[in-house]
Length: 237
Image (cartoon, rainbow, N blue to C red; front, side, top):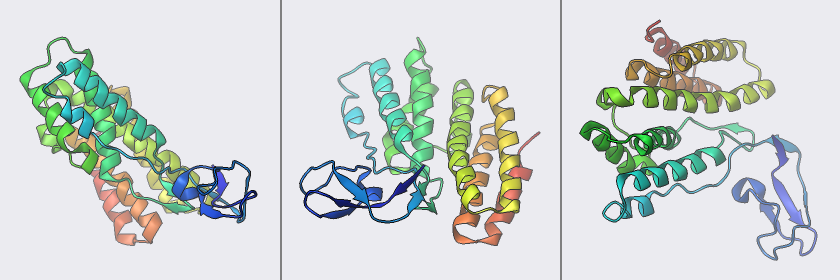
């Protein structure tokens, strides 16, 4: 959506950035009567905290199902509020968002599995340990039982990024970028049709391709466009 990023309170005259608060409420007096003082700019991101410390703190007190449910809910809420266009600028597909998306899917799978394997539990707890810092296990460490969850999580992250990337391209047209984005979309839909059950390395390649495409658009880095193409060429058909 497009918003007026700088606002002025009609009650007290204070000015603030909507991009930083995601609110039309005056931070000084609390009035909801404010007006935008600049042009409308595309903006989809929101300032949101992703902190799994309370979930990790409950490991010794709650059963696995409840821990997984809490982790899934926190991760999904974070992902829901995130976006990748901030005041008209395209952001990167960052590892924290990808890790949160993965944890949301993996935790949901753990929560509904009657008897998770040791490998599933270990992977879940490893992901829980560092997801809010953008840390996640390597694709080669994904247990076979979690391959579908992993694949669908990576595709969900790519789809979320592409949604904002397409909107950005509406404002800043680039035929090369749009063409490559279409190839990413085709691979994504194929993996989704397979319920995510593909080699985790292939799913991860799509994340890298989307990230490099964003790097090309945000910074004009021509080498990133080449790298994105290379990532796609490595995905098995």
